[in-house]
Image (cartoon, rainbow, N blue to C red):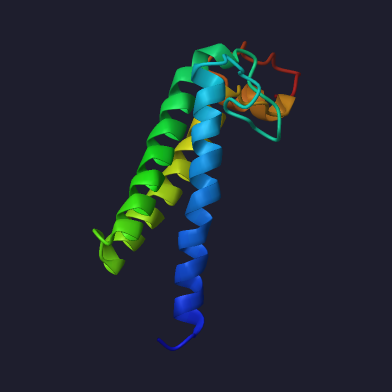
Length: 135
């Protein structure tokens, strides 16, 4: 086996699966069992106003991603998964976890816009401006 960039990146991904699986499963445990909602749907490090509403979704995302990562680790160590299969599963799991977590955090936080943008995007009907007033 020749050591090159391809081999190095493969080892980095495989070794990175261990802490990722640990942290994802630990977050699922904290949210589902310990009812610690401090890490639910974070946006700029702040939880949403009602984290208990979004906690089940965050727990499921972390539990599924952590379980898949553990299954990939076990499959690679046991020799059951070939290279292309475990790389595809691991990569897809990482990307899906990040995108789903991002989407959940943006859904959980209300959109804070400056006043002039809020008025333009608002679905509430605005009073028509009088003849001498600006909009």
